[in-house]
Amino acid sequence: MSRTQDSPPHARSWRDIPQQLKPRAMSAGGRRRVWRHSLRSVMAVLAIVLIGVVAWGVNEALQDPAPGGAARAADATPVKEIALATDGVLDQAWITRTLALPKAATLMELDLGKLRERLLASGQVHTATVARKFPSTLAVTLAERMPVARIMAQLADGSTRELLVARDGIVYEGAGYDPAIVNSLVWLDGVKLVRSQDRFQPIPGMEPVADLLAKARNEAPHLYATWKSVSLARLASDHELVVNSTVVEQVTFSAAVDFFRQLALLDLLVDTGQPLKDVNLAIGRASDADGSYQVPVTLATPPAPGTANPPAKAPAAAPKAGATDQPAPFFIPFNPPQKKNPREL
Image (cartoon, rainbow, N blue to C red):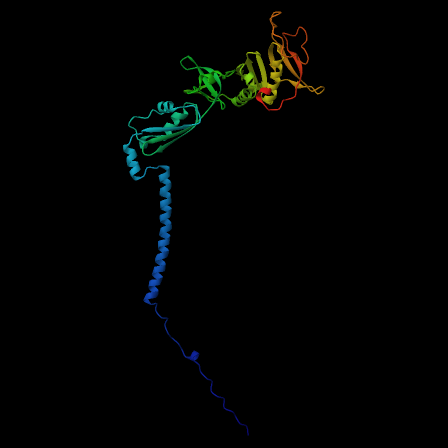
């Protein structure tokens, strides 16, 4: 006979009990915390926007510094002072005359762009900055051109006037320079001035001219003091500059060769004491045989016997007899000197 064992019933736990409960509603304190957090986020965004607006306003104020009371004060106060800062020779009288401000004009009434154009129109001013300095000062900062040569120009009314030329070829009248400095400038020749409205167009090719004159003035002032004019007639075609001086009627320089080397050779030729009429340094050439340097030289007509000064030193090779009217080569041993002292040229 089989016996069937009864299985004990399955024990139930609390997980088997259906739990149909709704989530608990947020308390009032929780809602306040959420609102405070959201409010802080909104205030942070507003603060960032406000900082951006303030920064923009400060930038605008710096560009046109006349906010609020300053603007009202500027509108009521005439300009009392023009503060001039320049790297050249222009003075307070020139700036006052050129700007020609109305007596009762205030800073806010001035057109700074037009005032700047007046300053640049002279040609002597290379760059100009004009700014308001409240409540009643106009600040002007100038960078001036310096003359490297002078030229005689014919004006529209037919009269002639001495004008100055800067390194960049700008032609201008010039004001405030020492007359001794102006009189020491070399004259320009071989140049045709072209008028454009009320001014002359810049002279092309002035950079090599300025380099030659500056090199001669700084390295060989004893030679530069004898120079009267420099011609640009052959600069564009042959890259040559022709100088007229009181000791040599015509000296031709090559704009494609170092000017110091050519000046040193010219100094050697002048020191020979020979009456030089024409020296062409542009076509001189070195000799591979003995290291000498060959330069075509034309001698002037020698003075009467007994009146000529003895030469300072004899040339390395004397010119041939009867060659006083034709180019005669001098063969001069030449090694470019080191740039120790300008007088060593």
